[in-house]
Length: 115
Image 1: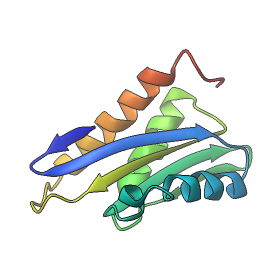
Image 2 (image 1 turned 90 degrees about the horizontal axis):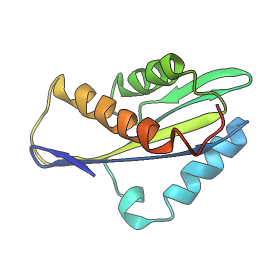
Image 3 (image 1 turned 90 degrees about the vertical axis):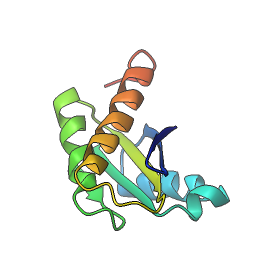
Image 4 (image 1 turned 45 degrees about the horizontal axis):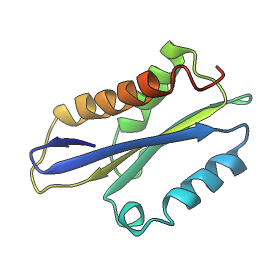
């Protein structure tokens, strides 16, 4: 978990091949009340049909996730960055925290996933 001025960030993800699988991963994540009550569950996925993303109110954050996934060549995957707002606006630093979360996920899963 990453923190910045009271905001907390978590990252999760899974292998997916369709929008229905993305929706199922999001539904499973939100079965945990803390994730369901998070301020934002921003995500991006690269499927065989192309890229998908949703900011969930964190304007521009999903594009950061999608671009990082494209640079990594990460296909058939969804990455979700969850933020619990801590009361202070982070400005542009919020994008750095999203990048930090995605980098941590990519690094942690590099040897455990097929790309």
